Length: 275
Image 1 (cartoon, rainbow, N blue to C red):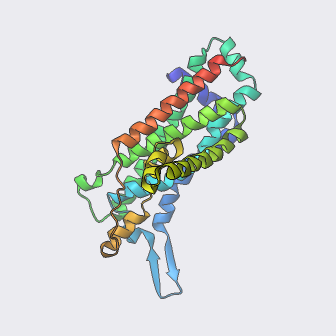
Image 2 (cartoon, rainbow, N blue to C red):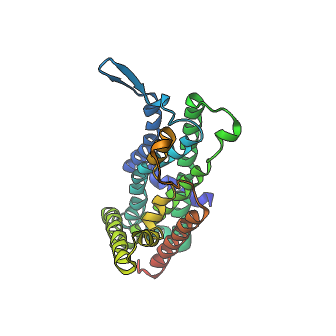
Image 3 (cartoon, rainbow, N blue to C red):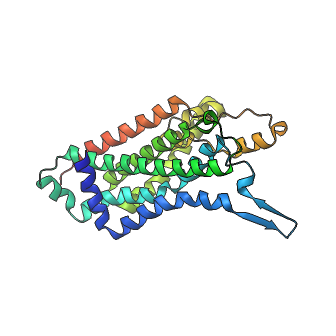
């Protein structure tokens, strides 16, 4: 496994664009550090500091940071589809197979690299959240600090699932731009399925339950938006609707299932394709 990861890292390091995108994908999530220190002056009447609003308290900080950091995954998604596009355009895929790398090892090398970068991203956002929380949080009990740390697991699974989908599209289309464009096509397709389910079932709730099993929606549902939770925390008397923001085991299983399917399909495509 380490040999395969090392091989991919060498390829990425030799590509200037990939180096820049990897750097950006790791740095941008740390904008949460900047946000935590922002002070907004309202015409001299009072100063609002985001860190003092309680949104960086434990345990809610795990929810907030992982949710917003997940939006920066698109930068590494470009790297993932480029890994495949460059293999075809530079003929390195064929050369690797000639040099003795099996097709299975080729796909696994991509998947192991995805897992490696997902682990790195999770550790970095976890450390950032931990130290911001230690600085701003009103709660210092260990039991509260590490409550809801499962959002980090959800963040990791979300990255692996999304990058596995990008890998599959890259294998399917062989072109980076087309692969990224297909993400938008899939997004539209999932909404079409939702409206079809709504027409067939006559219920929005049931239609959303169907949509929750689809790739992009299931990945999104791993970490629900924290805005409503913040409002509930600050103004409990004004929130009548229950909001389930927890990370559920079955949501993780669904995304892991899609990830396994995308990797398998990528392998089947490569195995059947005439290189």
